[in-house]
Image (cartoon, rainbow, N blue to C red; front, side):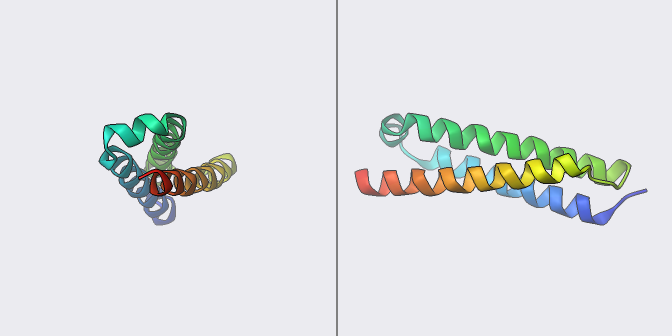
Length: 96
């Protein structure tokens, strides 16, 4: 049975993660090099969010019940990625 809530939530997280990955690739090489650690953490966080969102989509398409650990993991990863994105944007804006 397909459950629409995990499917839509997962698709939303996948879209946000892809948008974040596109944003970090939009920075020029000098800016990424200057803030390498923040860019790496942001990229890996987006990849983790992409994987968890894909899992949510798969779960919604197959069983329809998203495990509690997945909901908590998505929330924690999202807060971490948003915080890192804020720091990265602020660092790039002040250096450029």
